[in-house]
Amino acid sequence: MSVMGISKFESLFRKEGSLDIDKSDVKRIYDFTNNVIHRLLQVGIKNASINGRDVIWTTDLPITEGLENSIKEFEAMDTELDLSGILEAMTKLPPLKYEIGADIEEMLPKLSGGIVIAFIKAFKTIEPKKKNPQTQDWEKIQAIFETLL
Image (cartoon, rainbow, N blue to C red; front, side, top):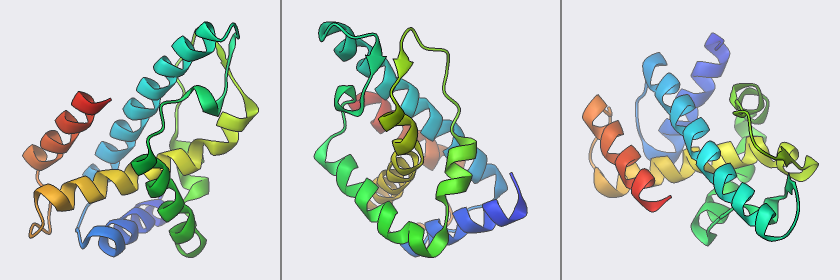
């Protein structure tokens, strides 16, 4: 990732959660976001199959109201930070049993951004005074998301 991309993520974390992150933290959020997207797509495959389709649509993804709100927050912030292009390049789709629809392809950067916002909010809920997340802090939040998804 470029220095510009890292600085934009640092700005997002400072603005949304008063958190100081570094290059290794950007790698962690990249891995985390892709893992969450993969899990959402796995549920999407099941839902598409139930509906007799072999293409996953956004309506097949289990997007909660909270994640939807985080996506909207990201969209509002993205006009200033312009992270969508970076997130689009960062998002790696795993090989899937079904194809994804064009609606999901278009939505992926926003979904990634919403996941990042949700992560920051969860972190600030658990560790409201912490400014510089450590490895064990990242692991706590990841464990919570893995339990919920």
